[in-house]
Image (cartoon, rainbow, N blue to C red; front, side, top):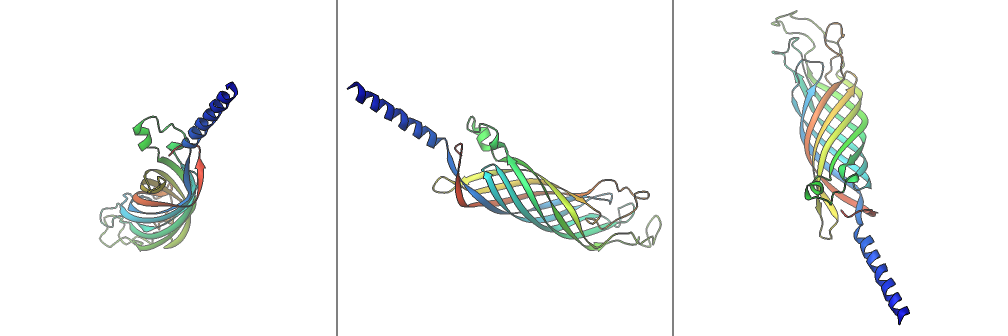
Length: 243
């Protein structure tokens, strides 16, 4: 009788342990892809930046639900300056495209997001960095000052290339808001992202002037503010915690 009691107690303990262990895990999809669109603002060798647009597509491999390595492709228009208001009468329009490899890590990897509803909602907050190449195509640029310029009318040409390829380093800060499918797995996400893009070269604005005459000390950059959609797919893997 005592032996049977021990067997029942041991079996109950084992089942409780298995139940707890299973409930403390979740399946997640190992791949996702997404699309995004937004506006960008340039900071280059011209005095004032301007607004443009950016479209993006990406595919990511998920080492965990919160750690990804992926590829991002971008297409858009970056512009800056103004032939009338710029002190040197410079302006440019760049129809660019580029690709980068990037690593992102989300807050959910480090915190007990089940402890409060607020932490659970922001578990998709992430930061990331990447490296790639950007192809610049200048479609409109002032190479010579106009005849009505206040200083040095007709000066030029401003040196630089209309087509070039530069090294590109994006830094990301964003958040994913997750949505489950009918089986309770995370299948979709709404993405908000802010991205600072550093280019190492003089192709983004098409100007490559001497720093002795013009301020030209920092990398040409543009910041992108976008909204996007993500879809999760592929094989599933077990994560150590519930999602």
